[in-house]
Length: 411
Image (cartoon, rainbow, N blue to C red; front, side, top):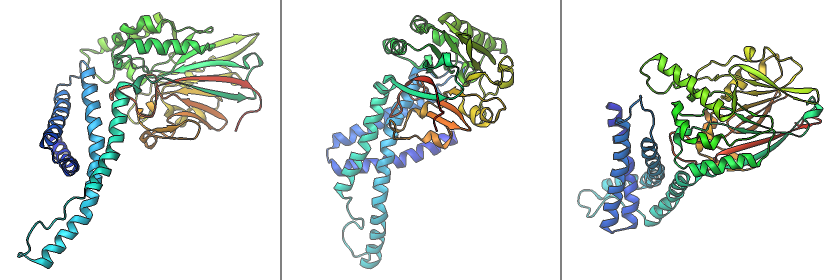
C-alpha cells in the first residue's frame, strides 16, 4: 500500500504539471474537465486491474490494455512535466527575486504567467509518443516485417550452399486478440519458402491452453526439412501460481504435445541432423538458459553429445545471454545461434541498415539483429508476438530469413 501511495503522489505531481500546459493553451472549462475525466478513468482502470490481478489466472487482455493505455498517457505527461518544470526553473527564481525586491506592497502575482508558446511546444512534442503508442496498440503489434540476411561461412558443407532458414520467436499466443492477423503472418512465413522453420521459444505466456485457439493456424506452417522448436522462459509456467507441482508439470508436457501436433520437433537439450547429398548440418536445441533470475535448464554439453566438433552447427537458445556467457566460449564452434527473448522491448527507434535503439540495450548487450563475435554469429529475433504492453512502437514483430552461403567469411 505504501508503494501505491508513493506512486499516486508522484503521478499526481506529473498530472498537475501536465494540466498546466492544457490550461495555458485552452481556457475552455470543458477541455479541463475532459482532461481530468480521462486521467481518472485510465489511472483508475490501471489500479483496479492491478489489485484485481490473480496469479493463478495470469495476465489477461484486460490487464494488458489497462497497462497499455496507462503508458499511453504516462509518457506524454512525463514530457509535459519536463517542459513545464524547465520553465519553472526560470519562473521560480524570478518570483523569489520580485518578492524580495518589491516587498509585500507589490501588487499582483509574483509568478510570471506561463508562456503559451512553451506549453504549445510541449503539447506538440507530447503528441508524438501519444500517437505512436496508440498506433502501436492498434496496428503496430501486427505490423510484421520480414528481415532477410545472407551469412557466408568458409566451412559450410557444399550441399547447403544457398540453404534458407526462417526463424520465428516469442509467439506469446495468450496475448493475441486477432486471429486473422496471425493467419496473415503464418501465410507470410510460408511465402518465404525456406528449407526449415526454427522457433526459439515462448510459445505461450503461462499456460498451454493459450495455444488452443491458434492450433489450426500454426499447423499450416510448412517447410521441406521440417519445423523445430525449443522452450523459452515463459513456456515453463513459472510466472503464475499452480495448485500443485504436478499441475505445473502436466501443463509443460501438454505444451510440448501441442507443439508436436502442430508439427514442431521439440528439442530438449538434444540435436538433429539435416542431410543432403551425403553431407550434414547439426541443429542443436537447448532448454532455457538466462541470467538475472531466469531459468537455467539449458545444457549445451548434453545437447551436443551426438555432434562432432567439425560439424556445421546451428544452435537454438532462447535467451541471448546464453550465447554471451557460455556459447561463444565453448570449445565447440557454434557457427550460428538463434535467440529471441528481448522483444527489442517492443519499443524503440529503428532505421533498417543504419540505426537502432531501444532501452532494452541497457539490459542486453545483444538485443536485436545479427551480431558476430569470435567468428560466430547470433541473430536475436525481435519476436513474433508481444507481452504485457499490448503493442509495439518502432520495434516491429519479426520474421527472420537467413540464407547460408559458402565462401570467404564476412567480417
